[in-house]
Length: 364
Image (cartoon, rainbow, N blue to C red; front, side, top):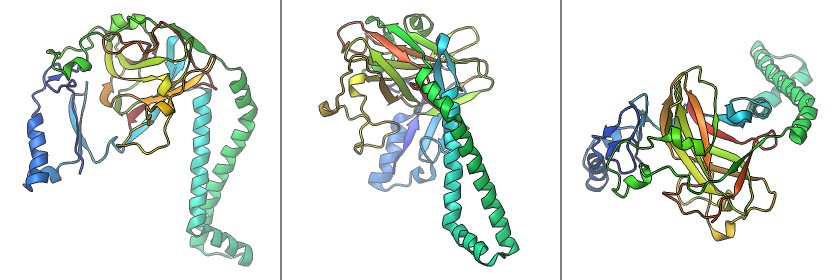
C-alpha cells in the first residue's frame, strides 16, 4: 500500500511557502508517519484504510483534496508552446495537426473495437442475406457514423499533407540566449530548507527581478481559472555553442500587475537527455533518464537536441486574468556547479519541426 501527501510546505516541511499563505505549516507530519507504521507494523486500526491513498493541497485555492490516483484521474495534459515575441500560445499549426491525428486515432480505434465485438459478422450477414433485425440496423447505423467520421478526418489529413511539408520545411523560429553563469534562484529556495538552513516561509520572493536575466515567455491573460496538478513535462529543442547545455526551466505565475510567483521547476543536462527504454527502479511520471555514462550524448556542432523531462510535482491554481510564464536559464549559481565551465549561447527552437513546449497537467 502506498500513501502520498503533497502539501504546500517547503522541502523541510516546517513552513508553508505559498505566497498566499506563508507561515508555519502546522501539519502533523510525525502523526501521519506513526499512523502509517502503526497500521503496517503493529496491525493497529488507525483509520488508514478508510483514507484515500492520495491527499494533495492546491496552492492559491488553499484547499486539501483527495484522490485514488496520482495524478488524479481527471487530469489532462494541455500543451503551451513557445512563440515569437517571448510569448506562449495554446494553439498553432503543430497543435492543430496533432489534434487531427489524435482524432483519427480515436475514430480508428473505435472502428476496430466495433469490429472486434461482432460487427464483422454483422457486415458479412448483411452481404449474404441482405436482411437484418431492427436492433442490428441500429448497430450498423452507429458503425457507419463512426466509419464516416474516420474517413472525413483521414481526407482532411491527406488534403493537409502538402501544407504540413511546407510548415516543416519553411516555418522557422528561434531565440538565442546568452547564458549568465551568475544567474541564481537565490538563497531562499527549497534546496536550503531540507538541510535546515532556511528558517523562513518566504521563499522565491524576488522572481520579478531575477527573471530579467532569464529567457521568458508569457501567455495571454487566462480567461478562466486553471488548476495545474501533477508533473508538468518540458519538451525543448535546444542547440548550444558548446557540446553540453544545462537547462533550468521554471513555471511561474504573473498577476495583473506584473508580479511574478514561482510555481515549480525542472532541470536537465543535454548530456543526459536520452530517454531510457529500461524499466525505471521506481514508479516514474514522465520521461525516464538513466544518467548512466553509457547513455551520455554530448551535443554535436549545429545539432538541435530534444530535451524532454519532468518538472517537480505541484498543485497550483492559476487565477483568471493571470499569465502563465515559462522562464529558461542556463545556471543556478547558488545551488548547482556550472558543468559547462563557460557561458555558452543556447538557441531555443520553436517551429512546426521543433515545437518547444511545456505540457501542463490541467484538472478538467
